[in-house]
Amino acid sequence: MNGIQEVGGSIPPGSTKKILGFFLKFKLSDKNFWLIHVFNGFILTLPILLVYVAMGLSFGFLAIDNGISPLNAILMSLLIYAGTVQLVGIQLIAIEASIFSILLTTFIINSRFFVMSSSIGRFLNKFKLYQRFLYACQLTDATFAIHTVRFSQFNPPKLELFTTNIFGHVVWVISTTVGVYLGGRDYNFDSLGIDFAMPAMFIGLLLPLVLTKIHLLICVIAGTLTVILYLIGFSYWTTLTSTVITILIGLYIFKWNKT
Amino acid sequence: MEQNLILYTIFGMSLITLLIKVIPAILVSNYKIPDYINKILEFVPLAVLSSMVIQFIIIDDGELNLSFTNEFLWASVPTLIIAIVFKSLFATIFVGLLSIIFIRYFGIF
Image 1 (cartoon, each protein chain N blue to C red):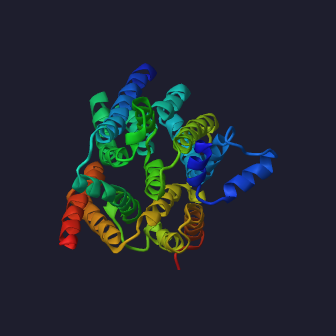
Image 2 (image 1 turned 120 degrees about the horizontal axis):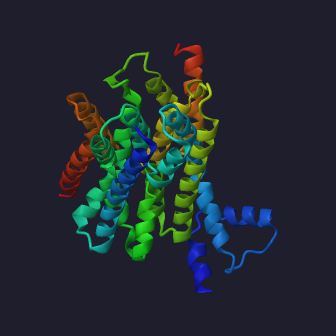
Image 3 (image 1 turned 180 degrees about the vertical axis):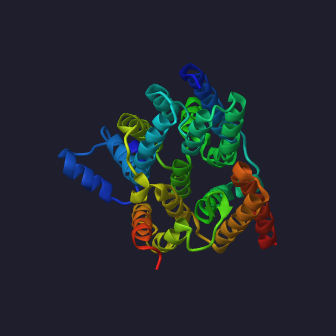
């Protein structure tokens, strides 16, 4: 009884219940209410799933092209689950780079997750320890952005959050698998514009986060710093460095704005 | 590289990635965070995403490119407009793909 009120209040548009009820032809009670969370999670993730399919397919192709065995390519998507690192990783493996330099590059490219993980950590204090662990394992750029919006609106149900994470991971692994088995043939994905899917996704994820003039200012500062740092030669360190400098400037602006 | 060696490399990469993703989240969620730290963590999503978008769209082959040869930069203009107007992730990605295909087939002007 209490349960249904609690979760019922947290569902944004009431239409989900209607749509789901229409398709499933049964009454939603508090016993099968979890379906709504799974469905909500799926709908939320749908746009990024499409991008994951495109990226996963092309990753599978490239992995085979660069001499990675099918099993290893699939394991990469399953165990690493970070697109940029995987793409750079297979190129480094192909040129026989040392393991140390591959691991160092992995660390540098993923260093931006230090700040992202800390940021999302603010919201996880009601999670049990193993849930925090599982949740953080499946953190990606896209789910981070989507969940930040969700957490700032209300307290989203755990089931919805884990659904988006698991759907993302499963789709990433499956599309890699398909890419691996279709691989070795001559396709030209670039003419379809698939390589722009990721930048377009990030633009779409960024905009809903910009709510005030201060937010806009933060974006401009981060963008400007990124260009400067990249030109100086920070390469893979650029994202982390510009983020750290930006949030420190942001703190200063925030304090100055208050007094 | 031999496939076995690649496998060990993948294990290493996986371990590093997981540690980076997991440790900060567990540490931050375990302690009461002072207000000002909370405030700067709020800016993280904006800063990270802006930085990544900028790197995607104005850096072409490792160099700053603001000319008409940079397809991503010009495809991001309609994409950004749609993102601002509709605030819909799906519409943004869709228009983004349409713009890049259009630019590749017909040129920018």
